[in-house]
Length: 344
Figure 1 (cartoon, rainbow, N blue to C red):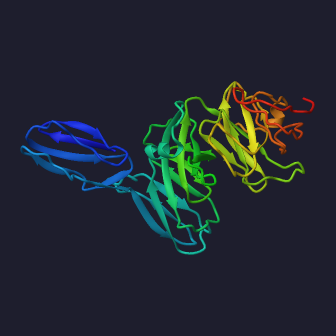
Figure 2 (tube, rainbow, N blue to C red):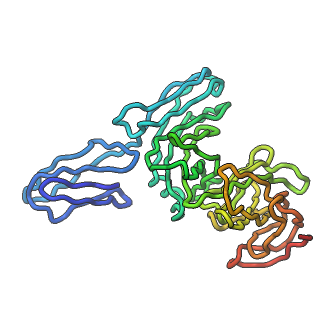
Figure 3 (spheres, rainbow, N blue to C red):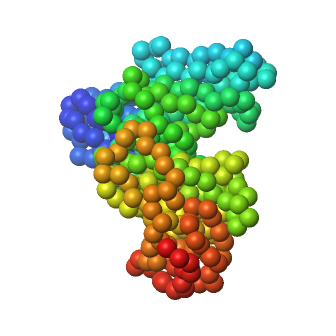
């Protein structure tokens, strides 16, 4: 949080991890102290103080997330913030008819870049934050997706690729993950969301190819809620749906990322240390990326890279001839071992 001092002299201070701040060496005079933090409102909004030969303490503020709410029923409805003074100005949430079975209180809450980086540790240098929002229905399950429009506060253009992700905690890990849910479109920043949750919109410096496919076990039964990841997907992972289908941004034009398929999460240590890996395959992102590129990994390349995979005694149909192995083959630079039998 930034604290701004104005009046007889000026300055700024940043609060520490406990929310404390201070200004030192101030001459006698009148001062105004004002807090600020993206997506938050403050009570009081500022404080006027007079320094007269002594220290002043206890100039405290209470921060609250910007929020709005509305009761929506089975016929659907729209929550739109038109108050120019609101930090949520320009936000619109459209809930279609039939999405709700009963009258439900829907809360719309601001979500900032600072909150995101607090939860995922750090955004990659080549990924820009383009907006975020929290939608809370109090645990009520919606039967249909909702449409969310955010103001284009960060200057996204038609040339920017806007990737939408849900901020989730995978089985209680200390660091949150961003699960890819689809693309946003420009006008406002508009996207479909499968259900109420926390969403962030990110834009890579160079567009990423979108790779899709299915994840199955050795009997070709779909694996739902499996994890798909790539070391070239930035902060994104993907989760498979009920029929094992996934889609994930995988790498910039001309790259050859490794796509990894994992069983439903039991231990996902971090974005770069993956466990319970079922299989992987190297694919080639075309030199020119179209905005809606979508292909099956196995149709692009049948080459496996033995220094870029981490494989356990499991199966997946994203790998063309994967057989069970006892030892793991891990990412280059990490511990290596084991063989990948098969014909490529």
